[in-house]
Image (cartoon, rainbow, N blue to C red):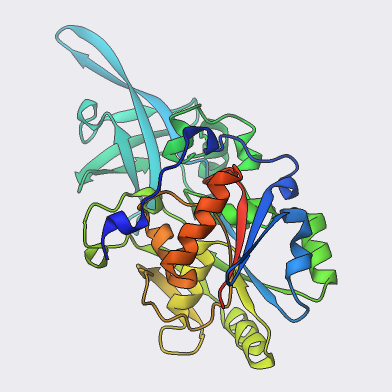
Length: 349
C-alpha cells in the first residue's frame, strides 16, 4: 500500500474553522454498505437500533497552548523573547513534555513567564521536545493553566485564526471528565445532552472509555510504504466495567459503535487477544487495510486529512473503494471537513 492510495483533493473552502451551531445541526453522511444517505446529526436515532452501544471517549482537553516571555540579561542589557509552548504530556518526574517555538531562544535553566501566577523553567531538550518544570502543581496548576492557556486547535485551524474563548467550549465534549488530552475526540463534539438522552430513550446504551489524544494525531505520514509508518503512542484505559458492557452487547447481537477513531483504536487495542478485556497503558496501534476488527461493528467519525493514518483506518473498516466513493460524495455535496466539520456514520457490510 502506497501513501498516494489515501490521497484526495480537498477544496480549501470545505475546511471548517468553527463548529455547527447547535452541535447537533452538523450534517451526517451515513454509509451502509454501498448506500449513502445525507442526514443531520440530530437524526442519528434513525440509524441506530435498540441494543446498539455507543462507545464514547471521555477525555478532557486541557488548554495546552501557552504564550509567554523569556527574559535574559546580557552585556547589551535586558532582552526578552516571545515563547510559544504547546504542552504534550506530563512526565513521571513532574515535568511536562512540550513543543517550544522558537526553541533556539530558550536555554536549559531559563524561565518563561506566562502570567502573574504561572511560569516554567526549561529543564532539558530531547528529540526536539522541551521538558518544562512549572512553579505550580495539582489544582493550582489547573486553575492557572485554565486562565493563561488556550485550546490547542489543530494546525489547519490555527493557521487560519487564533484560538479564542469560544473554543474553550466548542473544542470540548459535553461528557469530558478525565483531563489529559491535547486534541479533542472530534466526532464526539456533535453531541449535546438532549441528543444523548434521546439516544438512550431509543434503547441505545453508552460505554465510556478514556484515550488522551496527543498532538501526534496530527503528525504526517512521511513514508511511501504506509505499512512501515511508526504510530505515536497515547495513554488509554478500558475499565473492567466498560469491557464487560461491550462484551455483553456483542453477545446479545447488538452493534458496538465507537464514536471517533480514538475510541475505536482503544477498544481494538483492548481486544487484541480476540476478546475485549480491561486494559490500561500506552497504545500505538496502527489500523490500515487488512486489519481484523475484533469488536467494532460501525464507526461515527468526522472527515479526515488526505494521506493520514485516520484515512487508512476508515479504509480498513469500509474498504478503500468505498471510502473513495464516500469522500467523493462528501466533497461533491460540500460537507465540512476535519475537527470542526461534519460527521459520518460508517456501517460496513
